[in-house]
Image (cartoon, rainbow, N blue to C red):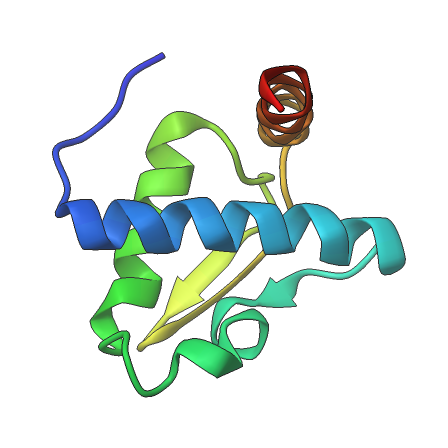
Amino acid sequence: MATRDCDPLVRGVVDVVRERLFDADALFPGRAHSFMGLMADYVDVAPQTWYMEAFEELEALGHIGIEANGMGFDAHARLSADGRLYVRQQRQAEQEAS
């Protein structure tokens, strides 16, 4: 799976966005979710540009669906099947490690 070089802090935001997209998709499966809305508690620590960087990184990884869009400082997306699989595998690995 291809990945781009990105700031480690942005990578952390990518991980959180991916997790929150997974949970939001479970609650509202037919809706694209606002990254800024999902990350409202990060508004004081994450520059607005990080949301689009997270969108671009998830898109490069194939972790967001084809209906995704990013404009301005916000993005709206759902996870792709690969993105959901990634989150499930990460959660399973964390459970097995604890």
